[in-house]
Length: 444
Image (cartoon, rainbow, N blue to C red; front, side, top):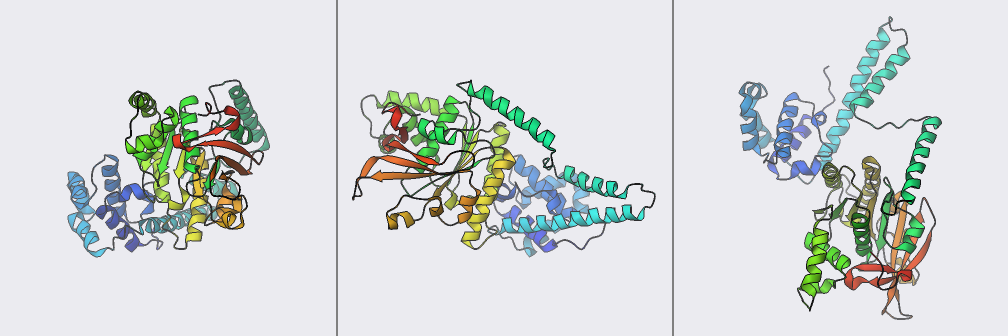
């Protein structure tokens, strides 16, 4: 069917960017597909790029030329080397706005699909031999839904009750299995008593001022669930490098002062302790994605990759939201709101607990009060989207800046349970929090 719904210039720009900038395909791989393009030869070139990328090969012009030349007749019919040269020479390749171009092409593609459905419906409407025209029209829409592999979203109450009973039975069984956990927990009894568990599909925000220990709390969760409950995890580390992250995990597990690991200061017994702890951490089923300022599309790609390695991926940690980017938005407030919605959507899309770290503004410091959910930095949308919000609030000696050695963990939002707070001991020198009732020997 002939259509005027396309943007050939944008299609060429996307192909030019993919063929020019290393890593560009990985940036948009979660949102781009053959249907993004209208022109057949653009689909043809894109499929070559995708194949080379999936094979771990470069997908620059020379490699694409060589790959497509294996079927010279088809390659020439699509324009051959001259057309690739034309894309390179005459198209604006913009890596910074690549995600925007892909998003716009996908939007245009959606319009083309609706146009196709409309054309088919018109044919059905004109066919007076069709006995149930509404049924035929609904069948066309249903078929479109199947093609896009959308999850079922419409249920009868009968189906919903059956699913509820199944989930209740599974949870009940897990309650009697000490080595099993539905969702993820922190390993701090007083906090877990409030939260229960952060379940698949949940979007949990851990927030605090800089240096408050929000990363430490996320690491407690990672160690608890990979070691005690045998779950796998993905750590998207935008703030710290992989060496710092594993150093903190080794410190927490082995109760080895982080400073000694970080600065290479050894003491009697250091190496045996370090070796024993590092061998445990080495075997943890955790994938670390070390990327400064990742885009929301990159995060989706990281989760897809992790799900391929660990189909039952247990949790995702994003450290932290303030460093995530969404190039589709220029206004930062709109950008953060969009990022929050996207992260919540990913929790549901991939069926995984999404643990996202965030910063607080300075309002509570200025007024001398405890932090609230409304103190979340940059956007109120985060507060709206979150299933749980845990605020890490280090306690100070009265009228001073001296740390008391404890923190209050404030459960400011808990969509599926109680709100409240609990006090924990700071053992930040070994990257841990310990419940007051657990004593100095307790914790993860």
